Length: 372
Image (cartoon, rainbow, N blue to C red):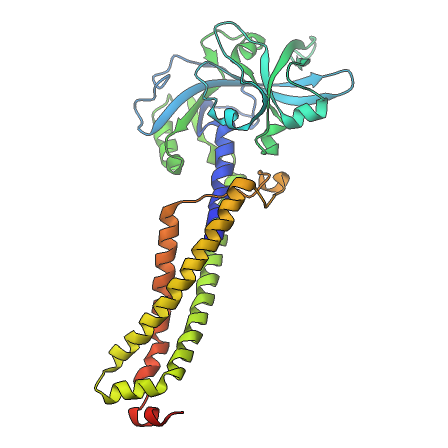
């Protein structure tokens, strides 16, 4: 049960963390007719919520971004990408965790040609840190030649989320502003980072109500509904596993209790003959059963935590990133759910033992003393 919760919740949190790393928790941008990742219409940075969103509590930061589609062209190959431009207010903690080679790019007052590319893109095109490459961007007028920009690979990241890794190249937002002929105060949109991901839906509504009517505030849950619906199914799987395991544990304890009662039938008869009531005798067996459950919980916790720590630090169990968006089973360990799991298991098993312990009241003292 512990492994089911730790890996199920761990996978949910890891995937949500990766989605928010590429998109923030809530994106604020103009209403667009298309559903692509490309920002077409600029937004002014002169907003009441930027740079500090003071009208809504629980917001960590607000950062600007812009995206533009392009094609990387080499002598032997080409690759379609989305250039995501970021500015000096960008939170690099996510890419810092997944940076494999090189360094993070530095955004300053001057336009930078340094970019971060994914390991997938680097492997496909044979790029290494320090290499330069040409990227072509189509102009609004299809009759004109595309714009060409030369970028330098500053770093290579690998988040394990193939859907994003194979598309995104991270660079300076001033590159996109220049390509789109935007002013310095014009950006593609804003990414809002929350302090508590569990409040995503609630804060998403609050943010939507506190931005201009011409802007749309969309949570990542609304932007990627299929992924989040799939993640919600993990809760159902966890509940089913917990129910089955507790039922099996309860049946095993009922069997053990019945064996104990059968082995102590003469003792039950003697205790009744000495004047003990049924409930006091039933408590003896329930206390004994509770001891057996506690021993089982001790070893279960010891083995379960050892297995989870082994997976957490050594990644023994691998997963297919094309299916699960991670390359190994993530683990989430928290003392709170471990304690609740133990208390709940103990309580439910003891409740299930109340009915079979009722057999004690049906045992006749005379017949029990003669029982062999």
